[in-house]
Amino acid sequence: RAPTSSARRVERRGAARDATLTRLDDATLPHPHDDHVRLDVYVGACRCGRASDARDVRLVLPESEEAVVDVYAALGRPNDDPHWADLWHGGVALATKIFETPELVRGKRVIDLGCGLGIAGIAAAMVGAREVVMTDREERALWCALAGCKANGVRDVREMPAVWNAPDDCALPTLPVFDDVRDCGSDCVVRAAKVDWFEPELAPGGFDVALACDVLYTPDAVDAIATLVLRLFEDDGGDGGKAIGASSSEGEGTFMLADPPGRFPKNHERFMSLMENPSRIPGFDGGGRRSIVRVTSSIEECLNLELETMAVKLSTYDIASR
Image 1 (tube, rainbow, N blue to C red):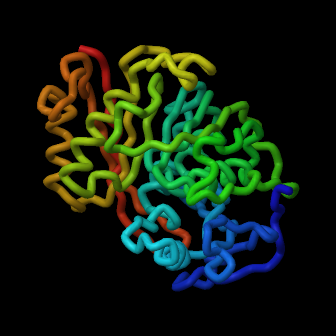
Image 2: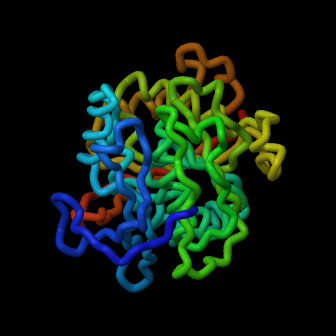
């Protein structure tokens, strides 16, 4: 059966007192060693925006990154990345921008790259995007992002596709039911897709808006993200583009990127260079067709679940065919 919310609360490990989590009744993210290393599921809340018009977003997540590290160690993969299990300030910045200017995504097809807990995609779904596709290379992150949409009253959230629904040969549970949540009023369809940035040719296409935060952390990632972003606005003719409707302006779109200012400045410089002249991207065969036409940036201060403040640079890249 689908799990429901429970009244038992915990304080997030290392978190401020206000960052309490509500346990989802009996819900766990299964894996082969969960008889002694459980990955329990909780619900937390994040406030997006300024005090006068802030919006609260509920998130579905493990208790901590440390709990995910313990699971990966038990699986013999201690170097797997656990950071999807935490709320990044950049995601809060993206969600806040979407709540403040919903026309950026309303009625559009949106993809959340490396969604983690999915706060940016959740915000897009809540304000009326036509479709949101949550993407990550970790299947358990995708489950949390989809569950987070349900926790915020998004009515049309599709179950995990069967092809990605059994990481480590353990089937993920049915998405939870939140009886205490009101319908948010959005007709958005939310789906999940497993996407690896380093295999951009396998990613879906036909999007109007792409969202991402903290993705330019290595030079290789810069090249991969640049290639991927430009492909996302092409109609791939696949299920995503044809089932709901292709991008309204083929080859054109908006890429919204959030990162702390000053983090990996050389990587940001390279990314801008590649997006201005895509022919410089190694191995990219579509470089002559589209590029950046305009970039706008701002610095925003955001809180995470631990109530820690961080400045985030929010950049919006308008991309069009030449």
